[in-house]
Length: 444
Image (cartoon, rainbow, N blue to C red; front, side, top):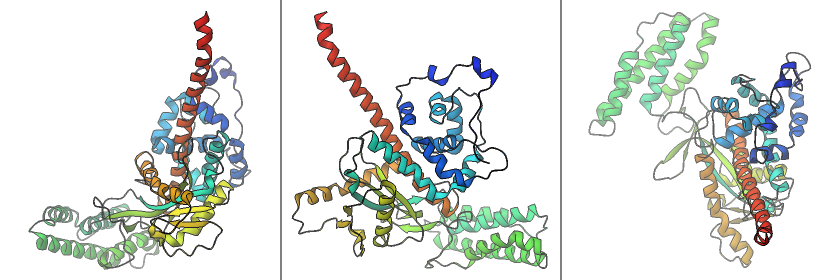
């Protein structure tokens, strides 16, 4: 059912309003007044039915997600902070201070899953509108962008063979216990001992012995899978219950080192192995993500004007047109020049935007040469999305969770810049006002 506006209760007549408790010059308060919350109600209204229990306010759900990614918090942590922080409550549209949470944490999961990544782009677009409204960034700055790709790592353990085989043994045993199957042998005890020995021996002189333990674990998992298959044969309900787990176990048992479509996590089959060539981490496990930021130095910093997950680990040059299209859709401004690194060579972009690749010789324009040198400034932005945001370890499930997290990470980065910009702007106004009073005070 559509969200309803809260009604004023009798007991709230004697409660203090949030406007009388907080500093109205706080950046979050000013930011809440600059955001067009009605825009979200209009865009997300079609996702609700006319019947059933009234839904939670759209401003509350959108505000919680913006605050979550601004502060790099989990769903549980942002809900806890919301109860303790009156500024969070005011930002989410509350009139009076609440001592109890008005929603369950799982409501955030269901809400963003219902809205989807495409419609959640509206949150990122609104942060850009506020940035232009406060002159933190100019529309002209959005005409020249820098593009790059990175890896949005998934919250999975490092996928070694022994780890995956042990997870398969534990998964089948857990399902067997749930459905009351009596197994010939669980292989849990011997599997854990074997995994411990593999970890101890694999990087030393005992490498051959470690590989023998890995082969034994693969044999045990195969025996366990065949034992379960014999016991559930002919029972359609049990076969359906074990189908997904057995299909993933079969992939683990048959995949080889050189296979292209390998399974790296039982609970997250969408995880991909991406080689980045870094000294500290040769491979990263997650999904490739494209990011676009403003190229010019703006008053409020470099804002993210587009970000999207790219499943399948496509070639960077093939993602250029799609990323430029997203930026133009979110900002409503046509891109004139796009600056990329040498990984985009051979992109074959046919749009109106001119694409300039780093280390290209023969460019006569000093403006373009200067802006091309600014391309490297996107690297710190990627670092901030990982260290200050939630791009480094994505906990949202599935490929849909990857797309949603990428959009919200970009919105959270822009929110941090807006808060810093409003704080600096207010400080500058106070300083200018005090400087005008100094001659008056000196005469007095």
